[in-house]
Image 1 (cartoon, helix red, strand yellow):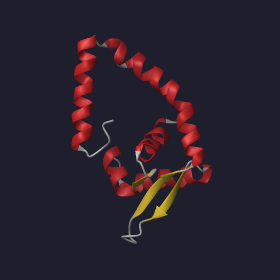
Image 2: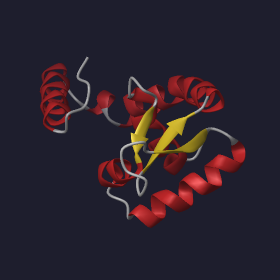
Image 3: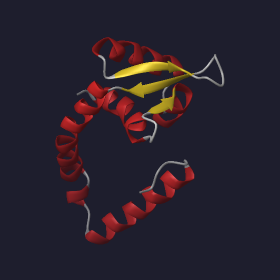
Amino acid sequence: MSNPDHQTFVAPSESPEGRTRTSDLAALLRWERSRVSHRVTRMEKRDPVSRQGCPDDGRRAFVRITGTGREAIEQAAPGHGRTVRRLVLDALTADEVAQLGGIFHRLRSRLGLSTG
C-alpha cells in the first residue's frame, strides 16, 4: 500500500461512522481538496473507498472506507507498525516515547479526534 493511500485510509477507518468529510480529510492531510478528490477517484476504482453524498449539504461529500479498504488497512497495519517502531520509537528513550505519546494525545484532542 502506498503512503498516500495509507494516509487517505486512516481518518475514515478511525471514524466510528467509517467516513470523513472530503474537506476535513484534505485539512488533516494538508493536501489541496483537488488532490484528495483525485486520489479518491483512483482509489474508488480499486474499491477500498467510495464517495458518499452529504445529506445536510449537497455540495459536500464524505470519503467512506469499504470492506475492501478495511481488509487492506488491517493487512498493512503490522508492517506499518514495525516501520514506525524501527524509524521512530527505537531511536527514542522510554521517557521520550512517553512525552511523544502525551504530545500526540493533546494534538488529537485539539483536532477533535478520538484519543482512545
